[in-house]
Amino acid sequence: MNTHDKKTEVLELLSQTNDSSLIDEVYEMLHPESAIENINLQSLPGELQQKINKALDDYKSGNYITHEQMKEKVQQWLTK
Image (cartoon, rainbow, N blue to C red; front, top):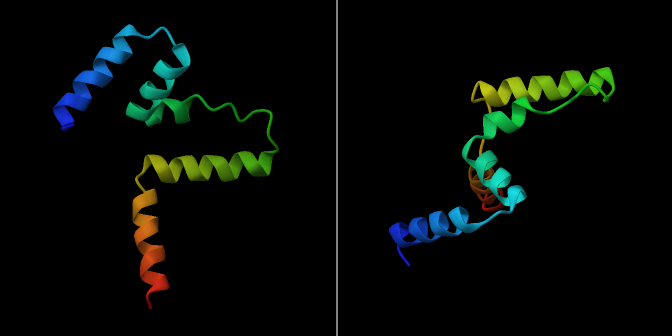
């Protein structure tokens, strides 16, 4: 199945579903910044809030690596 066929099938299945959890998950995958902005930290200890806010700032500024990039780094470390 090529990319176009997959896209067509996904769009068709999404348009037919009433599963709000699935729709929310797909939306968050397409808009990760909205999921980050909706995190409620108020109930957490102050030090943990600071660490999470630092991590969120890093993410928003592009200061992170993807899972795929990390897997490549680990593979490089293992082959040295």
